[in-house]
Image (cartoon, rainbow, N blue to C red):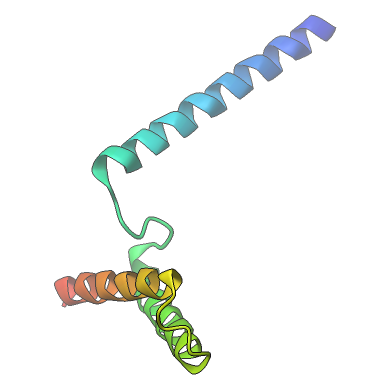
Length: 85
């Protein structure tokens, strides 16, 4: 029974690696921004990013790299929400 369990685990791990590789390739080649949020979550995400921006501004961290990333995320979400309207 032991080799059978090992073979089953090996097959499952191989399938998991294959599926992960396909997902990573599709996101890399298609460069989908905002993949962590579904379209229905965009308004909530926009609100959270704007709140984070306000906090960073209050802490005088407006020149930090994270601020630029948050600004880019806000711009992207606003553009996507405008497309839907």
